[in-house]
Structures are given as C-alpha cells and as structure tokens.
Length: 546
Image 1 (cartoon, rainbow, N blue to C red):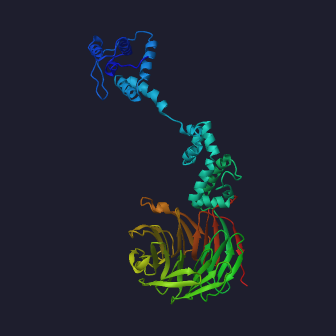
Image 2 (cartoon, helix red, strand yellow):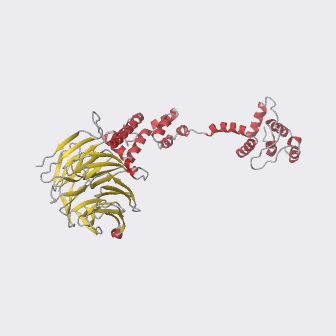
Image 3 (spheres, rainbow, N blue to C red):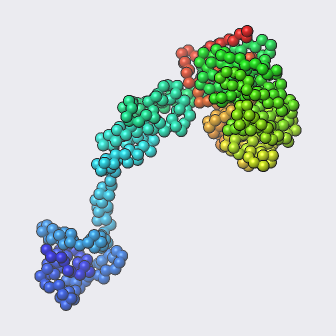
C-alpha cells in the first residue's frame, strides 16, 4: 500500500474500528489533494468528530456495534499503522487509549506489565556480559541469594559459576572480626581469597559452609549470654610477691607483668612459660607490645623497651618521679602517666631513639590511665576527673573538656571513636560522649573498685577488686530506654583475688589477678557434656620459679 496521506485528525476522530476502516477505504480511492481532504472533512462521516488537543480527550460519540468478522480490516489497519513513524504511532495509541473506559485500561495494563519486565540476569549472559550479572547478584545477602537460586536454572548457573557464595563469605571475613576469627580457627580461610585459576572447592562447598558458620556464631553468642566457657588457668607461683598486674595476648603468646618485678612470656597453646625478662627494680604495672618491641612501666619510675624476640633491653626512659601507672603507644607516639600527677608525651622514631616531646599537667592526683588516638589524649585520675586534650601541634597542651561525674577516683578507661568508658572506686562504670562531655549511662553491679575495663562493638567487660568479671551489653547500655536490670549479661566468678587486668576478643577473655593466676575464658571451644551453666572444668598449668 502507498503511504497514507490521510489527515490523522480524521483517522483519530473515528469512534470505532469500522469507521476508521471506512475512512481509510474512502481515502485510498480519491486523490490526496487539499480540496478532496477538505470535502472529506465536511462529509457526514466526520460530522460528530471531536476536536483533538495535545492531551487525552474523552469523546461522547456513539459506539457502533461490531459488524462480525473484520480480521482483514484489522490487518489493513495495522499495515497502515506500521507505515507511520514511532512518534506518530505513540501519539495515535495515546489517543486511542484516551477514548477507552477504565475497564479497558485495566486489560491493557495487564497486557503491558509482562512486556515491560526484563530478566536482565538471563539477558546479560546472552550478550556475553556474565560478569555484570555476577556483579549485580554479588550485592545480595544470604537470604536473597538463596531466593535468587530458585528463580530459574539460568540464575542458578550465574550464581554457581560466579562463586557468589564464596564472595559473600569473603566479604563477611573482610568486614567482621568474628567471621575472620572463625576462618582462622576453623581452617577454612585457606579456601578464600583465591582466584579461579587456583584449586578451589566448587560453589556448593561455600553454600553448605555458610549455614555452618552462622550456627557457630549463634553458639558463640549464646555462650557469652549464658556464661558457658572452657576455663584454662596459669598458676604463676611467684616466690616473693604474688600478683599479675598487666597482660596482653595474641594468637601465639601471652605477655604478663608481675608484682615480683618480672615480665613472663607464655605460649598461648601449651601455656608454658617461654621466657622471663628481668631488669625492673619494682613491680611491672603496665605494658604494651607490637611485632618489634615490648614497652613496660614500673613502680621503679622507669619505662623500659625490650626486643620482643630476644628479650634484650633496648632502651630505658627515666623521666617520671614516681611509679609509671599506665602507657600507650601507636604510630610513633607514646603517652605515659604516673603517680607524680603528670603525663609525658614521647616521639618514638625507633626503639633506641625515643625523645620527650611534652609534659602535660593539670590533674590534682595520680594519673591512673591514659588512652589516645589521632585526635584526643584522654586521661583519668584519682582526682575523680577525666581530661580530654587535643593531640597534634601546638594545641597539645589545650584542654578540650573535663568529664565530671564519678564520686571517687577513676582507675581505668578505654576510649574509641566518640565513646569513653570508665571505671571507678565508686564501684560504677560510666559511658561518656567525648564530643559533648555528656554521661550516657551509669552501670552499677560491682561491689568494689572497678580496676579494669575493655569494650568492643557489642560488649563491655569489666573486672573489679570484688574478684568478679562482668559482661555488659554495650548496645543496650547506649539505649536510654533499656532497663538497668537488662544490661549485665553475665557475672564470671573464678578469681580468688582482685582482678587487675583483662583483655578480650570475640572468642575469649584473658584476665589476671592478685591471686597470681592468669585465666583464659574460652567461649568458642565449649564442651557441654554434663556441665552446669556458666561453669566449666578447668585445666591448670603451674609455673615454678627457678
């Protein structure tokens, strides 16, 4: 058929398919001239046509009944429709739809919906874009990934060949310390972070591994809540004076500072004493180590730096007039505090090149603890206050604020991000917002001085002179609506003396006490055979000094 030269105003004005086809037949039989078109527009066929505007228009023209089989006329209509441009076709269909009733609109909508849907996951591999489909699905969580596998075989193929369960586990290991710790302890980290060219298990292995990991995590969380643990005990058996004042550990070793002036290094697995470092002439009150050095502070007023491998003394810092009560170092900066009420800030160029940068004063009693990051130095004292100072530049001396609230001296604190958690001889623990100085919560439960405290993203763990270790729910403590009775998850009682120091991670607490023991509370490897809740048989390792 030749291109249609009918004015579309006439075509669009027809009230039925039959009228439209009739108009088309008339126009096919006459010349396409302006005069003929004008005559046609004035014909009775067009006498009741509405005037078309830019927007949808509803017409009141009469509807003619169907005249039987009009398939040929429909085909003819479609062939003419096909000759128009896409823009004209869209405009024509818009006008057709505007003349329909709501019921018809519903039918058209039901027809269009599936046409507008696209299975892009199936379509992309067909275009050689498998990697894009894999990347899209790699953002799903575990539940969504399970659902995606059930959509169709093609989706299941993309997930399997893309090793998306492996990628999900790798993402969790990178971002969650609990997952990372489990991967190391259960030996499945060796199957992660390897490319496809190396020998790796199929996707089904990771799919079955994921729920096992979730089950392990739920078991560990339940153990923490219920106090189920496996207990290991190191008996230090100091000859002259009893007490383990400080400690730090990693996967391989525990390093402890003792009241008998020595530093003992213990094998983390066998719990045997590997080495004893001597040199201090007073009790070792504080320590910290990294992969190169151990730094210790003592009641002999000195700070000593030791080689972590050989145990050789590399440096001795003499500055404080009384006992060095606490120290921290990180990224070339070290801060020490003392019973002499001062805080010393040191530059650590190397283990043998450590120079005093500045001395900070302001506390009216012994400074018991310090902590810092790249923004603030935070110190707590027997004068009942916590002081916050700026770390860098000429502003190092400047106070930002003083946190007041404890009724007696403050023995311990930890600072991270905006949160400061402190423990005091008023037997309470306080949570502070360092930026505004507000006390967010007071935790009560210990019966004597709170001597040590640590927190992570989930829990606060505290140790006190009442010999007890308490585990608190950090998130609940930060929620002002949470009742005070719900905050303490568990109280652990095994030490027979004052708890001096503790450290913990997702799987364990390691604590030291005046009773001359180091206890390892293991919440991962818990045997449940015939054990009562919160108690586990202990293994005891005794070191006899020579």
